[in-house]
Image (spheres, rainbow, N blue to C red):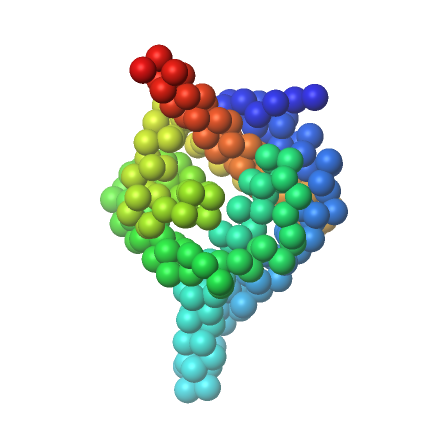
Length: 222
């Protein structure tokens, strides 16, 4: 039985173990998040039809959905993956819990991370990649710790210190896994995304456990 480790292969291995342990639950969560993302894809694919007034209205509605609704489901999905990495047994409906609590923090955190990473991408891409890697835990921190957007960004930056290259490698591997899944069978891409979701949740879980152990050790020493 694997335990969560703050390494790329350790996270992938633990994520793989938990993926099959809770496969149907995680698959359902993946389907919910995938369906929630469909309108966002419609926005991207309809730019060339943006000339008509009706389509302008439709795209404004979709953009509103992407800003105010989609992040709730995405953050909720990541939080559910994290809970299964911890061997909890949450209610699947908790994917939507952000509509009841933390709604404003989720929306603002999503906007702030998007803005920071977007500005970074404009600055010769490399700063944007650094921001993407170092802010990878914001979703978990908003949902798991209930932090506000600024506190979540600061905490994510602190937690990922020394893990930036590891996270970058996991992103590269995730892209490779996704395209291999597409080439083999389309469904393979879905499994790849599920595995990646488990791996990142496992990495956060492992680093969080390390921090808690360090705090307990310092408290005992004091």
